[in-house]
Amino acid sequence: MLAAAIRIILIATSLALDVFAVSIGVGVRGASRAAKVRIGAAFAAAEIMMNCVGAALGVAVGRLIGDAAGYIGFVALLLVGSYMIFESRRDLEDRAPVDVASGLGLFLASLAISLDSLGIGFSILYIGVPLVISLLVIGAVSIVATTLGLALGRALGARVGDAAELLGGVLLALTGAAFIVLKALHAG
Image (cartoon, rainbow, N blue to C red; front, side, top):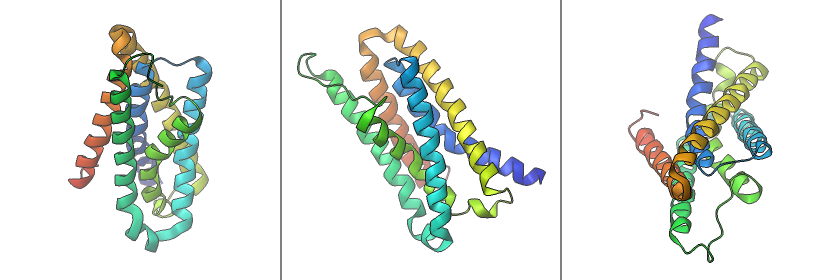
C-alpha cells in the first residue's frame, strides 16, 4: 500500500507542475482573493474531471489518444501565452487583456492544463489506490500548486509592474513549449 501511495503522490505532483507554472503566469498579473479561489477550484476540478473521463474511456482509447491529449494541452498553453504577449505589446487603448481568472479564459486555461490528466486517467484505476482517494490527492495537490504559483507570480508581478502581462505571457508560452519538448523526449 505504501508503494501505491507514493505512486499517487508522484502522479499528483507531476500533474501539478503545469498547474504551478500556469499559476505563476496568472499571478504575475495579480488576482483578487475571489479570483484565486475560482482559479484554484477550476484547476483542481479540471484535473479531477479529466482523470474521471480518462478512467471512463479506458486503456484501449488511452493508448490511441493519451499522448496526443498532452500535446494538445501544452500547445494550448503556448498559444494562450503567445496571445498574452501579443496583447501586451499593443497600445493600451486597443487591447483587451486575456482574463484567465474568469469566464472563457479560465475555462480554456483549465482545459489546457488538464489534458495531460486525461492520459493519466486511463491508468489511474490500476495504480493500487482507490479512485476516490486518488482524485482527492490530485485535487489537493493541484490546489496547493495553484496557491503557491499565484503567490510566487504575484511577488514577481509586483517587481515588474507594467510588464506583468508580457511576463505572464512569456511564462505561459515557455511553459507550454517546455512541456512539449519534455513530452517529446519522454521526460514529462
